[in-house]
Length: 233
Image (cartoon, rainbow, N blue to C red; front, side):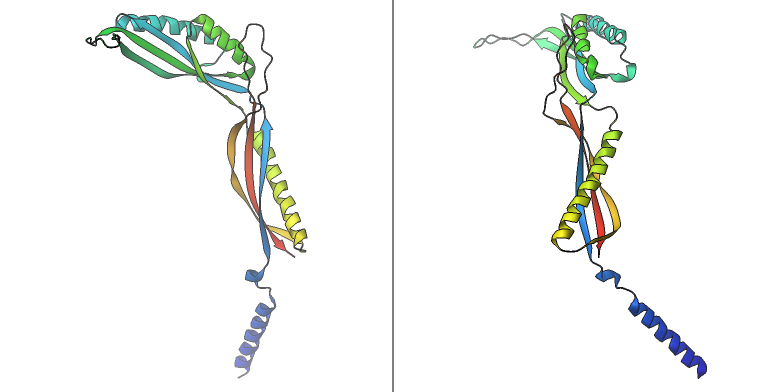
């Protein structure tokens, strides 16, 4: 009987201790999302450059294009652009057909061939104008598809994340004050993801050197978001 009584007392003590603990499911919490944006001017430019050549035969067109592209590659090498920043993006050979006059019927026949060879090039933004000018001077007759980027986005992303946390904290303090409650300890922090650099359309003209093609790099932004949950006191 004593043993049974002792067990009963232990069960009652455990039940009392459990009742004394706060109900975790009843805890009041506040979850707020924050966003941070860091901005900087791009330091790299990528563009397409190449040569379009014609010839009476496919062999002639290809030979002419090869000579011109060799001059383009030689220019890129002379300007110190590494091989890793040069990549063939398009190479095509197509027949050229006779053009019929309006209202006059004629038989379509091949009158020549056209070869197009393009490469994608990435250079420092401060060199872009001079590189474009040199490429055209070396025989490139196709330029286009220019885009801008930031080589190392880690510092910007770190700043955007810090700003996202500050934004969430500011919103939480505002909501807590309006609701007449106090923020307790942070229960969780979850990153909502980061967006790659996006162009901001506020052109920032570079000061080109004499004779160089003027290029406007503008500004880019990196965005980060976070979700933080606080225990309310």
